[in-house]
Length: 238
Image (spheres, one colour):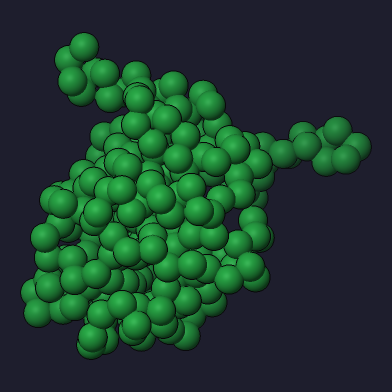
C-alpha cells in the first residue's frame, strides 16, 4: 500500500517477438531480461500484488522462479503484436480479483524491456499519480535537440523532402526549440478506474509525466541489448 492506496503491478510479457525471439527471457548480462523487473519488486515493498501477464510457459516459469509475482495467463486474443497495453492491463486487473482479496486503487505497468529503471523512479511516478488529480502518469526522457520533432523531415513517395512539422521552416536556432520529451518505458501509473474503462494509455487532459534523467534504453533490437550491457558494466565500474 502506498499513501493509503492499494497498488497492483502488472508486468506485460507476451511470448511473441519479431525483433528478438523470446525477447522477455533473452539473456542480458547473463540474466533473463524479465528478471531485472521481477527482482526490482523486492525494492518496492508497498506493492500489494504483482502479476506477470503472459501467454508463454517459458516466461511464466522464469517469473515463478523469481518468486516476486504471480502469473496471469492472457487469452489468445490479447497475445498478438497489435494488441494495446490497456486491454492487457484491464484483463490483469480483472484476474487479480481471484489472486487477492479486495480491490486496487492504482495499476502500475512495468515493461520488462526497460531494465535500467530504479525503484526510486517507479516510486516517483506512482506518488505523482496519487498526489495529483491525474488518471495517468508516464515517465519520459528529454529528447536530444538533434532529434527534436520540429527538426525532423520526411520524404514523399515522389522523393520530395519537407519538414515533418509545419513549424519546422521557421526554426533558425536551437534556442528557439521548446523542450520535447519521449516516453522511455520506465513506468506507467494509472488509476484502477481508468484502466477498467480506457482504450488508450492517454487520459485526455488528465495525463502528466515524470522526467527521469539519465540513460534509459527500451530494448527492441540486439544492439539495444549491447547498449544496456555496456551501461550495466559502467554502473558496476567494470
